[in-house]
Image (cartoon, rainbow, N blue to C red; front, side):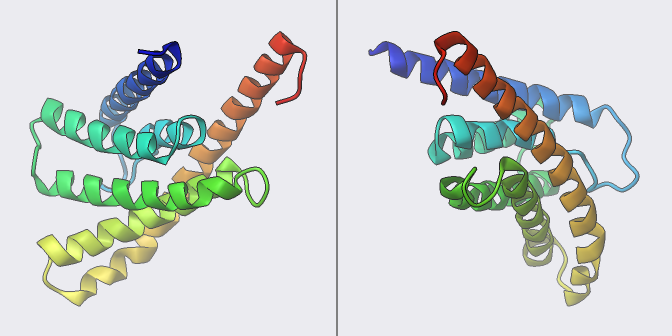
Length: 177
């Protein structure tokens, strides 16, 4: 097996482990409403998309949701379905935007768009699977506003980490990346 593939696999494993750890850490803190979380685990999905590719980003999302659900005992529960639906939608949005990153928008823009898609998908899953009334869409502002705020925080952190990474590699090689 080539060394490059081993490094990619190790980095993917690290991203998944950190995403699960951040997910578990966030669950320890109280939240004002059940659906409001900072979503730091999505930072690892964004970093995976930008450093490894969109397939690996989806792998981080799916494995994080599965492992966290197994650890919490919530596999196939309503929260699992909401988390998976939102995670897949957010990851898809960020993956679609990845080609234009740094030229058309920053990781901050990707993160905000991903958070918006995540929140929208969660309300759709709620409507399609759990709540049989259209009034559930009245929740959209209460879901999307905190999602965009969380996506902004996560995106700012991603920008910081990626710029630091670029500066670090440039200092090692003496070349611009």
